[in-house]
Image 1 (cartoon, rainbow, N blue to C red):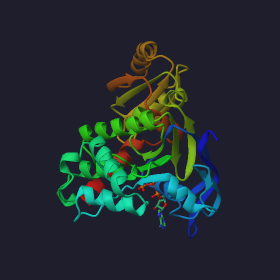
Image 2 (cartoon, protein in one colour):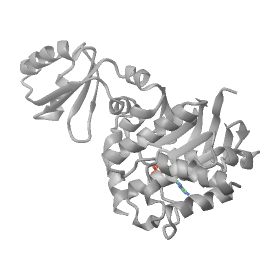
Image 3 (tube, protein in one colour):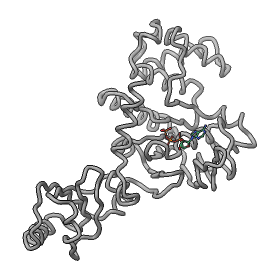
Length: 322
Ligand SMILES: Nc1ncnc2c1ncn2[C@@H]1O[C@H](COP(=O)(O)OP(=O)(O)OP(=O)(O)O)[C@@H](O)[C@H]1O
């Protein structure tokens, strides 16, 4: 089978609240697939259903060739998971954490020792192997969790927000490991993220999830094509004057939470002089202008009218404080 994950009409209700509202998608073997969405979109709930930790209310999911409801043990044997919150034993050393996990999966002797060494070297923690985890930084702990999740050579690896709260340098390191896992082991990787750059940098395909539904799916390039060619950001002296800025060359617009306006246009270089002319005709004062090719943030804005960035950033700050 060429698919590592097949999901059909998957639903999860918590009481009356439907957190996941009948989602369907497929992930091919050897693919990095990202679930991109804001806080509370239903990403973790989906990961928990796909990893057999949570029973779906309805629908079906096949992971590594096995049904998550009918054959949970078969699924568990073939997957690795790195959760959002650390699950390491902080009192034990890095080596001991790896060793115990390996024994749980039936590994032992020289095979286990060699794997631990190879994986701790892979995530650049070999020299810290005898240090207790409580002395590790957040980034070191995440690297150790990744190494641990690879011990039993999973076919499919689930990473729930793998770089949340980490500094840019550590995030880039973790991206390198994720790419290496795909390239060297043809591993299928399902990751959730609210960071657009993470989805863009890593994923072969991206599903954008919002309020429990997949609202778009494709490669980063395909998703950006939904928006069009260019996006112009404007700050107006009086934002309510926006309604006077109607013209054929403006394909759509959205008002951002910070008061700026995003205009979707075919070609910003051609649209800008026309825009200035129109503004001066109508007596509208433009305070600031920038433009760029659409980003995934623009795609999210185009689809939902909201920015993923604000919600994500606030969420990351909240988590860091915990
Ligand atoms: N055990 C639960 N009981 C009730 N509601 C829940 C429970 N777990 C999650 N929810 C709700 O379901 C929705 C989806 O949550 P979920 O954690 O899957 O979202 P998410 O996209 O992963 O966001 P986050 O990154 O914050 O976990 C949210 O509105 C959340 O409040």
